[in-house]
Length: 418
Image 1 (cartoon, rainbow, N blue to C red):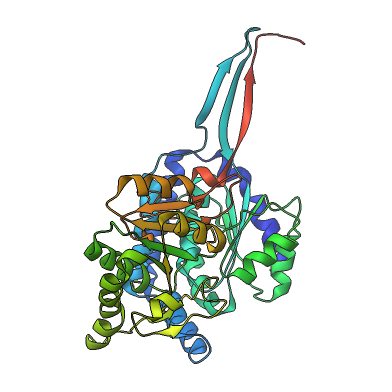
Image 2: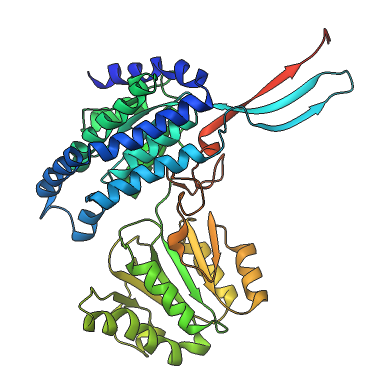
């Protein structure tokens, strides 16, 4: 089917999804998880072909985003099962009050209808998005990049088998076949057919959707994430957090890109930082982090002089900007000027500094003494996520079940007229 036909096919399933009971949706999710594991070999075979086609074209860290394994497929299936265990958002009463005339007004969560997700090279988004949409009572349209299309196709085949086994329409999850810009444009212009568009990917993709879509867009942002090491930080804790936030998976949006260090501790802390992220990793046979240093940091440790763009770049690689600041207030000001509003962290034992940081840093997730890598639906107890919203209306942070629903007012009376 062409793009328009697939969009209409998904839309035709929305009523069945909206009417499905919690038990039916949970049963479908269980079967979808089971089908992923049953069809793991087919998925891995398709993924191997995707990986082979991209070698030499995309970087090693981006290949890691694309790669699947039995463990990662099990993780995808477990994510779906976790969604099944979460409370059903549909029908939840957000607020209720009675007016003096006896009318009862309730604000109730309801399904969005049809949700479209445009994403790039992470196959796990396919199952995460589908699971959340189904539990939230909506059908979904998936449009992935050409790099991951073979993998996504096999994943969707398994998900459809699970839906069918539970008696829900297979077309509640549709994968767009066309991976050219034309299909993305058709999705962005599908007014009246798609209720919400969520882009997941790089700055170019997100900007294109925000600038060109004629349907509502829930903007997920790039992650220029900061870690500020305060003068009152536990320095060993700071090193553990920095290494995890930068190197555990540098290709994801919650990886740290900038380290800010208080001037009072640079002579003590920066050499330890260099040893942990550069020299120590070399000795251990691991990829060292390339440090992009401002002038003050360069006076203390070796690295590459920071260029004008290095504090405004989501590297998604083993690269980190380093800047020296004179106070927590200066750290906050730098973050305000350069952060994308995703995830930012302070490492400190000073509660007053922590309170100031959490009050004034205007990001979706603000951390005290913990790695930014926790900004994730699963880690937040939401099972999985549609993405990380860096906007303020109507959802912010990991997009879980309630964030991909809308609401309506239900008014009950006994004959009142105005």
